[in-house]
Length: 121
Image (tube, rainbow, N blue to C red; front, side, top):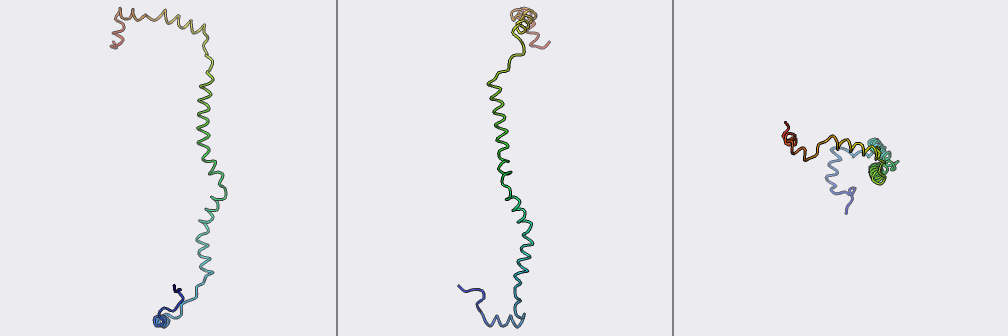
């Protein structure tokens, strides 16, 4: 394979030199400086994100910790039943009051109160 510096067409090369003169020498230092200036900000962003990978790893643990907290709370509430706030004596008294004040189902059917309650009148 030929390189780009080989003389491919000496007549064309001579005609171009006569028309435009010798090609200018490449200023590699200026080109390198221009490339570095344009790449400085994107490279700084990449360095900043690569510098500390730990926050990205911990970011994935936050939802896992929240889910574990919810499961732990549900498990703790399911295992340890809260003690009743109403004592057995109070519960018996409330049941007695309800039994005495509410009519029995047979009394409701006999007095047509059930039908009127169902109709809403």
